[in-house]
Length: 487
Image 1 (cartoon, helix red, strand yellow):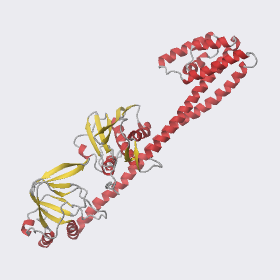
Image 2: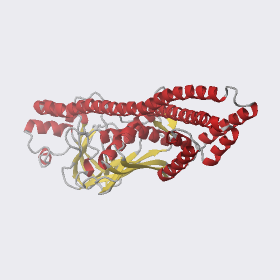
Image 3: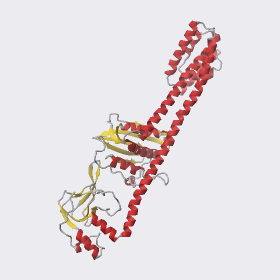
Image 4: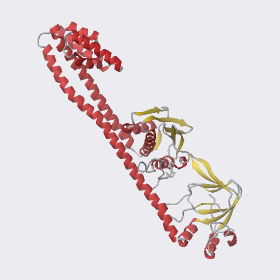
């Protein structure tokens, strides 16, 4: 940035009064501006000030053309251009009661040779506070009050999101836990039944060879139950009917009650014929019931194993989501973060909503602030599910573009109206009804992605398709660069 010098050309007081910023000042105030201001001339293609550097000067355009720029993904993007005499920029808020070092919020560049009137930031601050005390109190309240409100509401939104996800996680954990308890209770009864039936068929009526053959059939039944194929509803019904008929023909009582268990365990008529060859007719029913208990026991153990696996998976997802016991900045696979976030939303995904994962598994692990990045995924997924409603498709896609990892969260909702699309990242702006949203979710996401990770977040929307794309540098946030986070 080109700095301000003490010596230099002053702008005549009469000419100062032709600038709309100063035209209403009385002579004393105009003299103060005249005394401290200087004229600065810069050639074309020169940076007048650079975004992010300490805000030291206030600039007013006297002649020439300038452009205002913002840094987007490391590229300087022009947001406006002006040749209007009196256009201003630079240190526009030095008068606020803010203890932090203020920086330029944009950059300004000379497109042609330019002539500028410059004032030190401290001069603007002193003048504003001395001349307009009431206005300064109002502006302090507006800017600093808004920042405080934004912080408080942002924390509240995080707590609400955490509460909602915690309730969902509790619900998700309750289902497999209840299944495990139920299966354990039934398993206890079935083991007792197995002991009873075993006593009936092993009371001396079976010789050693027949008993050995029955034990071999039991082992076969266990293996069949462990690898039983998944049947369609029609196939299941047909198989149960076939087994019921066979059991009735062989005088096994309540065959209709045994058939579903045997079918689920992969047992068929040819296998049952092996049982008839192993025992006498009088021992057939106890033997089949004993083997049925064996099959059901194996199936129940499978249910318990599945339920405990789901519980372990959910606890792991919750730990991954919250990043407990982990460093705030770590190198992670972004897919692990996405899967953990989606797992936390299981209870909120309506039956009519289909979740599609299109992952590029070749992506490298990247250094990120994982817990905060999960907040971004939470906000984007929550908004997408809200837009989809009862039915639609939520797509989570990953890929690579140049030196960045790109994550896309897309939905088939009604889309974001074009007239408000440019405002969706503004604090407190929301398209949701009053009470449904605070308007800080996307603002928080923007600050985490852009300021914290030096990435980018963009949106494309049309009816039936809205897509948020987050790009993150593979190299991660560079050491020593400001993260831009707000207090």
